[in-house]
Length: 161
Length: 213
Image (cartoon, rainbow over all chains, first blue to last red; front, side, top):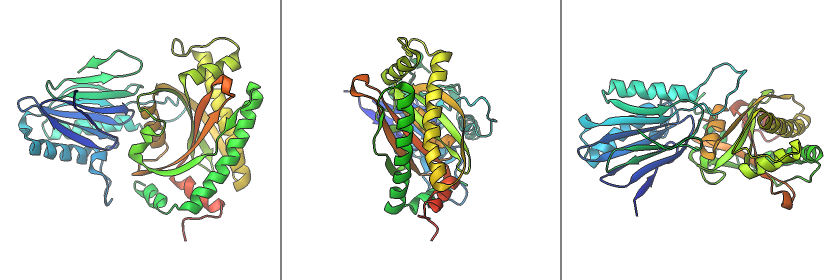
């Protein structure tokens, strides 16, 4: 049996060597994986919103792009990853409903994608592949033995990024 | 205001949940009647479930986050902002469409303009009749806006519907009603009322169960 680690919305998990880290049903949320291919340590965050709210107490760190990435890196380091080797992959950030007559006031998906990219850039973590945006839901699987990320949708064939 | 909605939800107790359940029941009754008339079939609504849930449970409210569902999201304007989400599994959607259009439909093969607009129409009717009862009880005006449709993973749809309507806190208020057709017709769907943060307060005030002292 392959060890499967599930990541729920606004949560993050890390693993090592083998097994799969999975998050299901990404809509406007962004799934981000960070992987160190030397140590085979990797992790995934299911990010809901771009930024940790100023002044909020007891907020979940894994919910926001900035704090989720910071926490994920810390946990990967604890698990034995060399943070200099980390490579990122990203999926999600979709616009599921198309309200044709509504202004583009809050495209949460786009904002999550942008925020995640910015933070990775500032931390000098290369984003090596992504499957983001558009209008469909995604399930994301990180295979810890290879670092491959499998993207499943209900409308299209599975792809590996 | 981020965080705002959590503060409000934290103040919601059994009295508020009961009051919301009461109005939602009346709304569901109205909606069942209108839908029964249009389809010329008996449609029932179960007693609504009203719960405050951790946000991470939202994608799993209906079971599997990866299950394929049809969903129509109708935003509302007027005194109550937020929206209404109507969901069906593929088979139920096909059944409903068959009753409406009068021919065999398989949306998994083809979700065309006719199918989409028929499903949106049903969602509009359900929303309208549901909101009418809210308008009457609370003496306010609520208007449905143009609906949008998605046919995709349940988890992704639910997550986005709640977030788009401002449920970005750690908790969400879930007002869920099950829609059932005649046993033989095998139609089953869910209907979610999703008031935004401001409207929730306004609704509770109107129902005489204010959360502000």
